[in-house]
Image 1: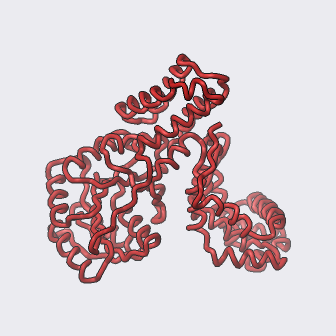
Image 2: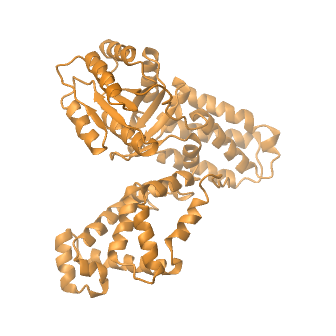
Image 3: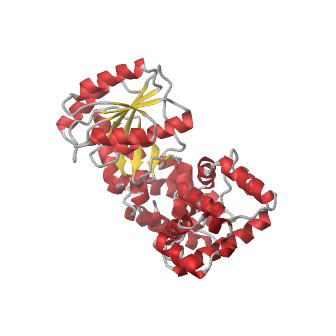
Length: 454
């Protein structure tokens, strides 16, 4: 997400860093470039106008013009205004009500509502230890109910069965009654979508809202629709009182215009980002962290949180103890590390959150190729015997031919993987324990993220 905006603003930032001093003239030129970058990112025009005006008003003051580092000061102003336009801080779900807390999901067809229901259920179970029931009131889309049932099973949420012949209002009433009987903490209600906004759709969602009286009404919208996402959210908010937005498919959106437009146009906060297809691919929306990513300063706090959430601490402790005792780091251990990386969104997901690196183009950092390489390496190790994994030095040419056939790879790829394994083995010897590396990352948690305005 924000790839295009990162690249365009990156050029502006690099120009600013070379300025010995700023004048009203070169601030004007800079703001023109920022304006073009925002428009190319499909940010809504009213948002662009207000953002540029706010930056201009603050930038032409003495604080910037007389600053010893005017370029960095102006970048800081851009950062602060980006945060402000997106909503200042993360707004969490409000679950402070008599259980069950009802969350009503609304949106157009194809926006990702049903998968977002499952992702949100998983997030509530894992992060807040809530018991969650889900129900589908979508009686129009073929297999919508079956899809939610399958996803509910995947995330271990309670599924309330419904049928295409039932009325959505009747389903909602029965599900709410069942959630109370089973003492569910949260009831998430999936609703029908249309290809466009129509009277029938709005009347139905209004009726469901009246019956359920939800504490949260979340609008689910596809990020790739750009500023249209903000306009659609506004239309829904005029029909029912939205409390927040889930922006989906952000991993496929290179522009990011929706994220910068929705709060300003609707007045409602983005609460979550859908960052992939898997049920774990949901992350809270933090305006300050997103602004940091846009300006190429990375997102260290989110990276640390993902590391802590994704790593199997028991496995890490066992590996640490193994290395401390002087035992060799083998291919089974190497495979575990590769699998942990894929859990955190792969190489691309990691690098987007790292300072400076997130700003690089794919020409410089081939993250997609890197992710495919990781998957290939796991397949190669899976095709080895337990003895070969424990003693890689025993792998001969004939073994490599068998492994290549079993993993669908070439012998050259096996040689490359073994070379990378040897490099990882040598690096790990220098650390002697993984806990030391984790403690280093852990210092960021609970404190200020170090930011570099230069």
